[in-house]
Length: 184
Image 1: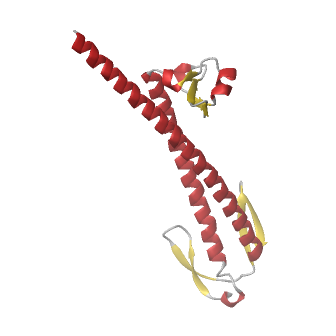
Image 2 (image 1 turned 90 degrees about the vertical axis):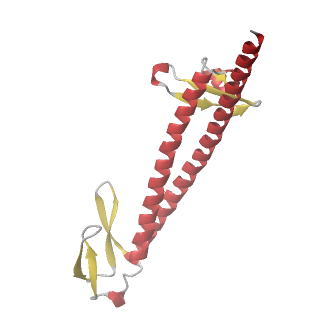
Image 3 (image 1 turned 135 degrees about the vertical axis):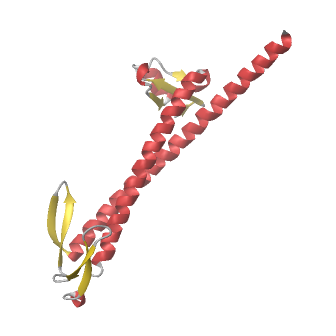
């Protein structure tokens, strides 16, 4: 997000929405006539960028947490399928109806399972095929979570840059006020 050492941010065409976006200096100059180098931005503009970055970081963190939780659920499903062996057929077990309510049951079929493949569709699969399905989903979720984590790190760096710039501007402003008071 830096071109020649300069950071740039741009505001949307509708400033009342408070939407800010960090952009490459060259792209911003070509596409957004309202782009301003970070060091030339006012404290109010920097604060808006900071708030937007914090909001985006919170959203990304929530997304990453949801992806990791889904990944853990698929891993738990694979672990459960490890107990579906012909030796366990006919054995008694506790069947979860809710997260805290279990009833007695009997394992009657250990060769196939019904898998929720999304959007309300269920498919009967062999245990091995279901494990493969869960492993593919786990890998996809892990890859997506890693991409979100990379984006989150980039946003964090941008936030640090904006915060440092704000601190520098505040310090400079305080120095100017102190100098003006000492002159009078």
